[in-house]
Amino acid sequence: MPELWETPVTYGAIGATQARDLLRYPPAGYRPLERKARIGHGDARFEWACASAMSWGIQAGSGFRVRVADGPPQGHSAETVYGPDGTPFLHPGDTAILSIPIAGPIAVKAPVRVIYLVDEPKRKGFAYGTLPGHPEDGEEAFIVSQNDDGSVWLTVRAFSRPSSRWWWAVYPGLRLAQEILTRRYLRALAVPID
Image (tube, rainbow, N blue to C red):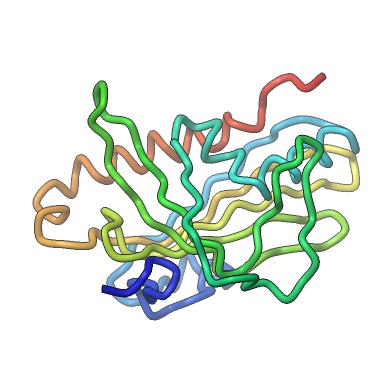
């Protein structure tokens, strides 16, 4: 069995969360989603939100346990950048297992791989794609942006569908869970900073 970092993503429309018309024309068979929330104001908030987003902070702040999977030896050609707390920032190809707590020690595991990064002066973030074992097939993007008025926003864009017959059988519950988790994502970076 291949290592997790060697396993391909479970969908074909890689990078489709970047499409401007995603909500109108999602990949065939997938349900699109886009949610946006204001998370603060000013340069300090923007820098903090970007650093948090680029080091799995949105997921951790939403209640996930994040375990970064081992990858190939020195798999990144770019220089590693670190956040203020020493956490390395994400690179395309980084792989992680997100554990979604359900009750006590019971958790749903959701393996993902970073597909692309956004690194513009007033817009930063990343998208990950699902790997085998994830409840859904698809992609999710987390983009922090700062408008000219100084307001800071988090946008979550995704397209997904259940990954197996079992997950299709509980599809209404899966959609509800996705909606709840998306709300948590949008609140994760709207916390006070020092």
